[in-house]
Length: 253
Ligand SMILES: [Zn+2]
Image (cartoon, rainbow, N blue to C red; front, side, top):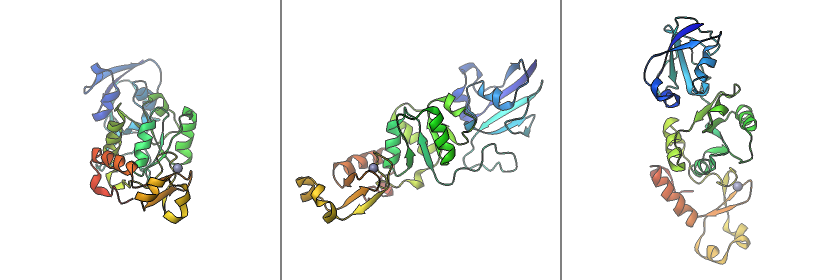
């Protein structure tokens, strides 16, 4: 039997029962346990944790906790240098790529619209999402804590917001992605890359009105979907206004 004093910091409190938030509390462990298992027993996915101090010393996930230990658990620090201590996660993935959990389809489409590479399929199982994350170095976006507790996932983010537009705003802000927004570079339907295409080359595929009024076109290299500066762009422009990134190239296509 070990009594551990625990405190979770900043947004990690989002995962805790209200009585345990923003305060130190005593937790009784009935058996020998790692600090990772203890933290996850409170519903906090390990992918959200970047620093653990046990009695003031930084430790790894496999550290065994002992009676009388004081454990402080910190989230991923954005823009704060904690390099002298053990960072629990590997360095951030250099290219921002996502695999999006099955229940976040609209988030995936919005992120693609902003140019982010998002694997998404509403038939993916948890195991497939985890496997794709590891194999393709993609950050998992999900609202399922159990998924993020899978050990093989090193980069994952639990999306707090429920509304899709709020979710986009949250992901952009939390991961500081505003500078990486490239609107109209990716197919919202299949995640393929868009390339400019000559009107001549696709003229037979266009409806008469589209052929008459539009001159600039793009085509998805994967599924062949054609995009033009019509209603799609106007709708997208409004979305970009929503995300506060209208001035970052919307409409340039
Ligand atoms: Zn496509």
